[in-house]
Length: 388
Ligand code: CAA
Image (cartoon, rainbow, N blue to C red; front, side):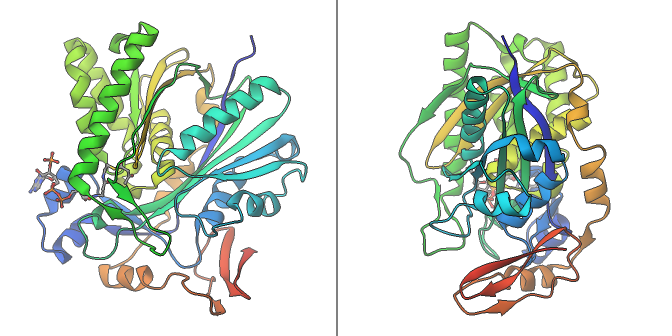
């Protein structure tokens, strides 16, 4: 049977960041609360010249060949911070990236979970149409507001994944177990540009959903923790994944516990420095794991836990392919992080309050933004995108 899965992955986050020690000092908190208690060291700062469309375009552009662009017949755009209540972000991508016009374009939403649903839809589509490719993007800006308890868990960026037959990175196994429950742990009403959250409750529900789908997964598949070389988690902040992992670590031998903890550390290297990117967080964590693990090899099974508030949880597995590292853009995230510009907390606050809002025409100076795709402003209530 033809193997279907993730062929390539690429990541983008804007060129500025703040330091979590400085944010802690500015907010009158102990730095170790942010560094250890939350598990974040830096946070991406999103300028007015980037939105979910430009971030997704910047991520996908770096991995797509001319042949990929011709073969893509579907673009699935997962986001919970979309820019329009009608038109999908995927249509903009089709034009900006020069993708085959005979492609379907659609946006998907269920909090941070939609990227996983998009990936499953892509896999099933390519199973039926193995000569075609599907572009999945998960792009978000996590905004809670200045001086809120969620501020330390902000961030933003986009992960792009190409789903194809005979993939380079990993097979997406047909073993998902999922759970939905109508709750209010985190949401964003249509009139609001920042999330509403019941923080402690959301963390408890996350852990509860993980344990429930994990237990169901084991019962349905007959597998147990010994079958996994690593587990990757949705990481709204990296301590969240650690809490979930600790819930099931006692099921492993002492030796495997050490190995799983090592892989977990590898899986949060990048997320610690970017922050939350909602739909893309689990996939940045996967990228971090693949890039930073010292011991993963072909054939290894990786457990994936996806969580979207409101709420939906899913656990599934990936099986690594022989040349999985070749599916990542070499050195991409190290270069991105090395080139980021530090900003002070005072400047970050100004940038945070200078986002595109309202219907009036506006123009942003995009010369300081080194990204290829930028948002130039708003004209006649239409976003103006530019290829730099
Ligand atoms: N040294 C080390 N650790 C310290 C410390 C210190 N000096 N001071 C405090 N800590 C620890 C605390 O003990 C606590 O650890 P535990 O959770 O293990 O008990 C941790 O730091 C955080 O402290 P608080 O609980 O007091 O923090 P808080 O009340 O300020 O809020 C938060 C934390 C609830 C995560 C808040 O940042 C928030 O609401 N974030 C947004 C919501 C969120 O991310 N929820 C996650 C699940 S929902 C989801 O996953 C979807 C999504 O993407 C949003």
